[in-house]
Image 1 (cartoon, rainbow, N blue to C red):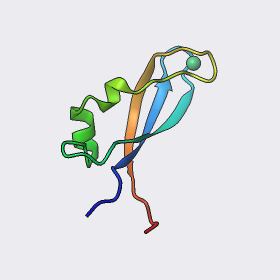
Image 2 (cartoon, rainbow, N blue to C red):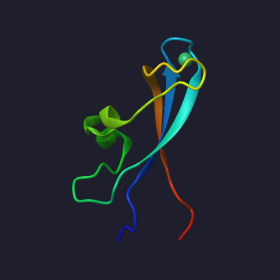
Image 3 (tube, rainbow, N blue to C red):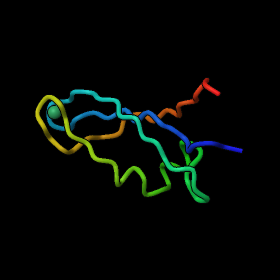
Image 4 (cartoon, rainbow, N blue to C red):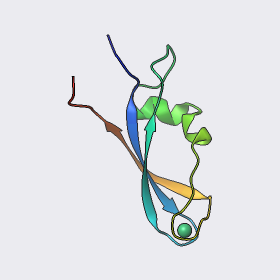
Amino acid sequence: MHDGGARFAIHLMCTNCLRRKVQTLSVPAVEDAPTCVEELVESQALAQMRFVCHGCESVIGEIVAIKQLYSELA
Ligand SMILES: [Zn+2]
């Protein structure tokens, strides 16, 4: 049994000023929710994620890495 959905750290790079940013993305614990990075990439969750660069306020970020976060808390 899972209490919550999976959590991912999305590493983005601003295409304008090349600053990097890490955003945490939590997916709901529903039937078809992605549970690993591969499934996340194939899902629409990434497309719905909003990015705003804190340096130049550009909204175009390129994903450079995705890491799944595992909670150690029970
Ligand atoms: Zn920027």
